Length: 102
Image 1: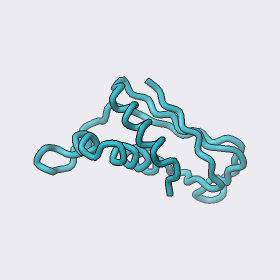
Image 2: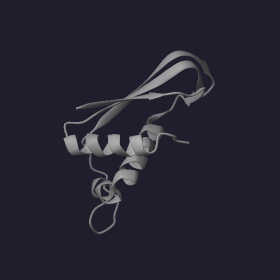
Image 3: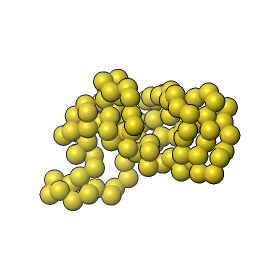
């Protein structure tokens, strides 16, 4: 399954991978903290470093690179993919319930 997010912003970091993980983790914690903990933590509380069952990518439209940031004149699109329907549904619900990320 695929989830496409349109992000309106003026500046966007060139090194955006941790931002993508933060958006997904925040959306999952808003929707179900327990589900997020199951993905990112072992039952004994240690961090789960195993490969996750999703991927994501960003695409910027009409931009100019200024140092470590993109100056965005249009939008940034984030595409999240996963074969896990529950993951996509929970991520979607978390994003819809909190549309303003900072």
